[in-house]
Length: 428
Image (cartoon, rainbow, N blue to C red):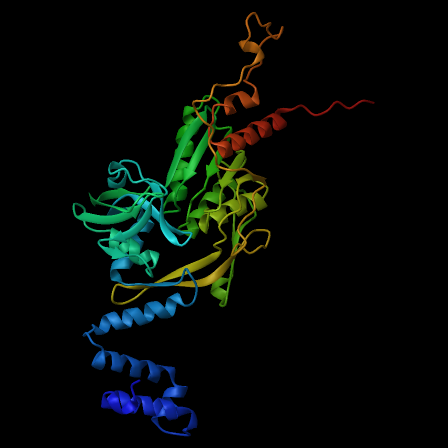
């Protein structure tokens, strides 16, 4: 056991001084005890003068700031210049990288999406693969911003990864970074008039892109759009203003989201404005347990304003807003400044959004033979009347493998039939 006399003189004095602080009534030790800034400066001096390896002063300050901010909550962060550049790439949706999305799930970093025509797709990375190392460095203890900064880089440079797939042994691969554009909004017909819209992220201009795609599909559909399914499953969020903008496309009035913070500037109610082309278009929204943040804003806004049926699983529950403060050296502070409330006044944080209809995401076996129907039998009689103008509600839905999408489509069709149903006769 080392005694004070066996330590370097400076450290021996420090140990003696700090040990005497509780009994001291004045002097330097008492000032250190009552002044955390003085304590910080003292620790910094010891590290700079006595640590076994020389450490850059800037690195020490960055580490101290990062540790201080991350003690606040999981979403506040300090972004050094490299991490901040990666964050800005995320907001605009274009970056030099591998082309996959990774999230922290169940104590590990899991790939949740592989983007089409990306380096990741070409080397057969898959959703569910677990990321273990980037450029030979383990990811333990790193924030997501640091991991993203390590994976991003100049187009044409090589990225080395180590991963694990299921119960198989870990494997390594190398891929060449390319310019990757993150998908924001992808819209497609389920059948003429009915559209499935996958909102992957709330990047800049997401609301404008969605409006443009709906207009294009509306023009291509003989009778215009009759219903839309907004799929925000596995959507981690993004820019709050874009979620508000998309909600406003489908609302003519009402609160979209409220924010509540410590200062008056952070207390705000965002409301819808009339005039959008899609204010009366029937809507359903698909959510799951990884629908988060801005995606939860959109889901709650449409549900609470009685504009959409929510289908899926209870959402993630990330209900806070982070303000981005750019700093002089190219770094940035991402600081939580307010909590989000739904139009009904419920806190999203820690609660999430409970859907109206709960359904899993299992997909049926496409190789399974379809069920036999009366019309498939030899010499089956017809209905004896003229065929209806449209197919039965569930016939078209039977072609949809995704159970949540199928249910959402059925809800839209049933809503359309309810609107068309004539009022009951009044019997005198």
